[in-house]
Image 1 (tube, rainbow, N blue to C red):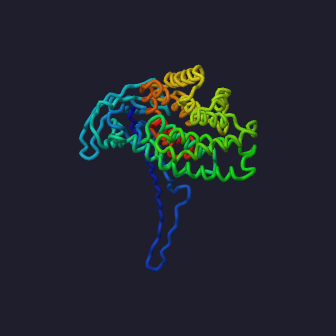
Image 2 (cartoon, one colour; image 1 turned 90 degrees about the vertical axis):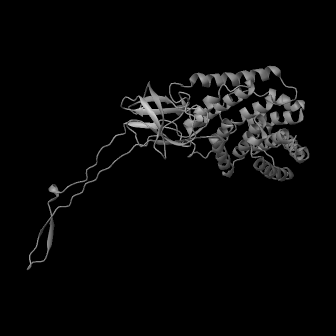
Image 3 (cartoon, one colour; image 1 turned 180 degrees about the vertical axis):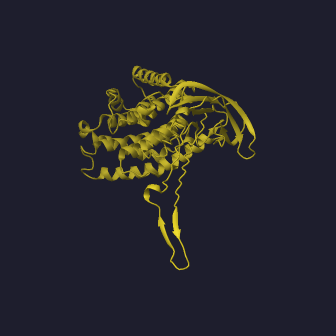
Length: 416
């Protein structure tokens, strides 16, 4: 993964305020002070100090053995960077800075490779003009630590939105299903599922609990309960049976209002119940769904539903499956083609595209690696993660200021 040096611009402000007073003193007269006329008084002087060199890095650091790239923006011609032991001040590594044809904020972008450095610890990356350097850590499991912190942060976010709450659970279960059980906080998932089950049972008990206004949210709950049965059923089958029974009951009660339901929510429910039960009615529902690419409140569930459909053990439309797989791989290839390896290693339109849409693309890269049993897109995902966490021209941690449940859920999936 690329290595990034952060150069925090130093703005030195020199303020000189001189008060000049004339005083006349004598033994017979009281002391009197008089200011000089305003025109002759001193005024504050501000020195304009411009940033001429910027080292860019991920503030958290890098995993041992991953690709580490140093980025330097400078008005001056740069040739080398050094890695210095933070305690002893010894120089541990000297690397070449290669110029690119890119200019950002009036400075040329230089790239250096630190990957061959085999040490672990906290170091300083320095250049000729930035001798105090920027700290960077290199150690094992940094990405895992960051992922764990992100999961804990996501779990603490409260929401009244059924769509966001269900999406958080859906992504967690997909990650556990695709990767491994240990990659998910199952205690949190089980607790959340029990709460959702309790809520939905109360709604089912009410005569008018499901109506045309809340049918889409009920279908999301139906899908989540059915998906939990499929993912967790092999571990504790008796515990999840009630989840499936409730999901089926919710779906049946939603059918009279299906015309009012969001099409993606209905597709999500059909895909989840098809996988859980194998019944043809649900399978037909999935095969009638058309991918339009429209964005709406429930649009993020489309990809989740596709993955559930593909992972179903039950009979499916194999041509449809092949088309889905082909589209995922093609989308991942498009991301790779747009990735600027001569810059920060991210898609060229990341700033205009936005973080949420970018993460949608990276989720497809993750699934393409899973489907192909390769890691062809792993470096692309890692470079984007570093970029979002501060290894970008503005040295801005884009994730720290983002508390959107869907965005953080997508990032967790990409980081798995």
